Image (cartoon, rainbow, N blue to C red; front, side):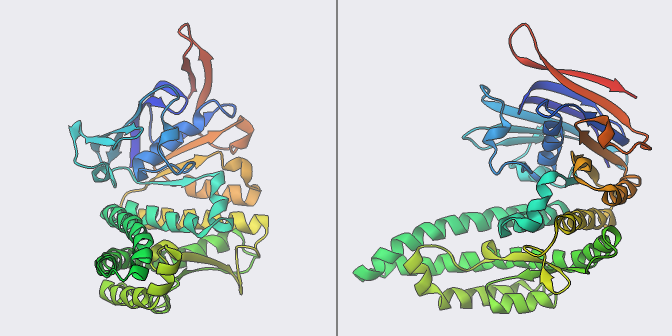
Length: 389
């Protein structure tokens, strides 16, 4: 799989940029702040409908514009598919597939499959559980696009149930049972969609675990062995996850029981205390959790291992995913650089950003794209791109 063509309109710093891309290695070189990462970010957005840098879509729209458009042509085993994504502030985004509108942008998921390495990956090890949940959910969605719908439904249930908990808390003291009866209905919805999401995550972790272990051993052979485990505040969920259970009925029953047990606590606090939105992916090195115990080098090795494992899983599913390396070589020592180079040497397409040429392995045969920017006569920022093949 590779991206043949990319067009950005009003995306981040780019009023417009149009690029023809090829299989093999392409390096975008330019000073920080000149828009090279925005190109990789746009491709990641096309693969996941999310950014690796920000949580909302608003910053993706260039200042002063009311919408941004990302258009890609993806080639997979000789077949071309065109994706157009329209990102609009304050309104629902729109998408087209092969120039035809689709009902939801989620319908384009799976067309472009990619794995992204970026400096932000350290947050997978050192950051909050939300970072690791997002990693699992994005990868699960790339592999099985229907999970995007499950995630959306579950997030909606959590929002509405949280609002109801705040209302029901006061109604409880007034003796009004209608709010509590409605809460029972939302408990059922949370358990239904939550069980599907948990099952997808557990299935993914089961396949990821041996790949993470192998990747970490490759990156840090002298370090402690790496392992990953699915953690949940619901004891039954965690016990079943430990043995790789993917039966949604088991998880649904466990969530319903835990919701009933913690009903009083939820009403007192006005928040959802049960469900996969509170779970975590535990990363371990030897007998200790990586967070808080791993050195800087070990943290980078663990973060890279998670991405390398994702890459291997996607390769097993079919064609090679597009490999996106966003300014990551500058962060790595020689041994970790070499391990990443070895993976990149086998990929069908690798797109890399770097601030200077010295950040790129000297022995790489790669297409170099110089990126700079200038003010044109209209006062807008326009692309200035030079290609050195």
